[in-house]
Amino acid sequence: MKILFVGETWLGSGARSMKEALARNPAIDLDELAEDGFLPKVRSRGLRALNRITRPLYRQDFNNQVLDKVRHNSPDFLVTYKGNFVYADLLRRVSAMGVKTVNIYPDCSPHAHGKPHREAVGIYDLVISTKEYHPKLWHELYSYQNRCVFVPQGYDPLLHLVSRPQSDFQFDVVMVATYRPEYGRLILDFLNAIGRVNIKVAIGGHGWKVLKSQLPSSWQFLGGITGRSYVDALRAGKICVAPLTRQMAVDDKQQAGDVDTTRTYELAAAHCFFVHQRTDFVRDLYESIGVPMFEGGDELAEQVMRYIDAPCDRSRIARAAHQHAVPRYSTDSRAAEIYELLKAELVA
Image (cartoon, one colour):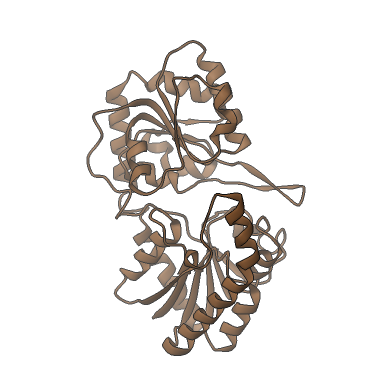
């Protein structure tokens, strides 16, 4: 099976992890095109403005390179991971060349990223979503007519898998997640619930500056961390917190949010002890092995206070979660599921 894979390439991205997992399958001949090589991610306002001006030129060059690879290599599939830069016009041209198009979709809503992306997602021959609820909502809520199936996220065995437990901790509590108002309310409620208890807390992820003045000066803010630094930060905490975005606003309407995230699997693979925001999906994964869960800041504080001075319990639960997740929830296992779906798509 020949695949042309399009996605981001930075260490720790879901696209890179899935591409490498697919490439490790001996039945797959994989070529790639780095989507993030065409429009650099920048922070300065001036460079962002320049990106907006040059974006059509970058996209035209991107389209041409995709089409050149399709002509020269004749893949069976064009597989994109989310496909921010892949618009409907390119998908139609690739389909006209006899290549099936597949999107591995990792986000909550395909309606939340602009009209071109919204249209493109409905053009693919097959969407493989990491969201358990997408197949049920695909036609009725999102108004798509193409097929959507569910394959969960996973951990990257080359990045997140750590066989030994951590013994030397810098922090009592660590959370790594891009700031969202929902997460901000969770942390403020947690702070209010623990009161004057002095604990060492570290928060990683972009955007937390907006809340910094309301949090204790002793708390550490790690900024946007990815790759090895991300894994190291998680393992530096006695207790890791796995929050979820439960709902999101799209076109002034509420749509479903996360029932799990990549953290759900990465924390277990990295041999971390974690408390996870409760959903039915996560309870089915981990409740039987004792992973503690929470809903709001009060319950999060209760779980932290329960386990902060219970190293034996933390070690036992972290070990059980690791043994349960490895290798079951690896990207290699997910890639094997995807390979079977692609094989079926070839003969459909």
